[in-house]
Image (cartoon, rainbow, N blue to C red; front, side, top):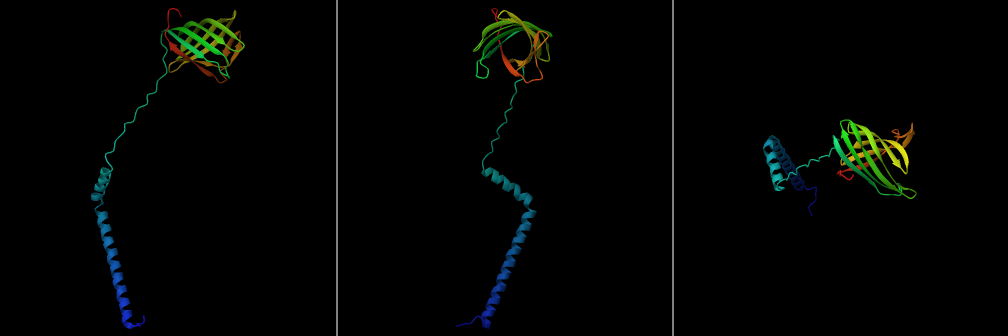
Length: 202
């Protein structure tokens, strides 16, 4: 049996090791040369590669962005205009309310009439009266003089324009000098009055 310490065997191992190391050096040198060539020519082959990748994925479809149009608030102009308010009874607000508002705007002056009915667990009545006020910056400030169950009352009201009509800013009311006025230091509920046509019978 040949031993590993035999001189011819050792020479063979040494020769094989040297050959392997030369092969590794040649391989690393070739990789180095290829890297230099790729870096030097990247401006040529990179765009072509990107184009080929994109073309292989198919044609890209550009989806147009839809412009969202925000509907502006109404602008109050001179003339007669009518609005209705309807509220169905709920647990929190157990009264069904229906109102019809008929106003005429002439410059800064607002005049008209409002009539309504309210029905609830402990009250059912109707009321009607006149409106006199002013218009400024699309906001109506008026005094509603009305009669309900034979009693005469006055209430100061504030309306602003909305998308489809006007909104009454319903603040808690406090009495001042015989008239109910909004307590603007508190929060309000916006009551929407929808724009409707005015008829001769209104």
